[in-house]
Picture (cartoon, rainbow, N blue to C red):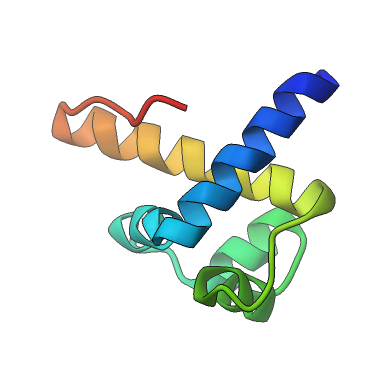
Length: 87
């Protein structure tokens, strides 16, 4: 991913986390914080800290988290016939 796209992806992710949207996407997919942590190479505790606003997603794990949330959202949209949120 090129640097400008990474910056946009991280900015969008951080806005989604701060608004509670990231948690909503995860919960709607019925995926636990621990499962997300394992999938992106971090811990469930880190995901909990991000979702609670105690920490800010950073680095490679944050990029993988943004990618996973996008995938989960697209899967949900495909199942429900809805449109995924524009990134």
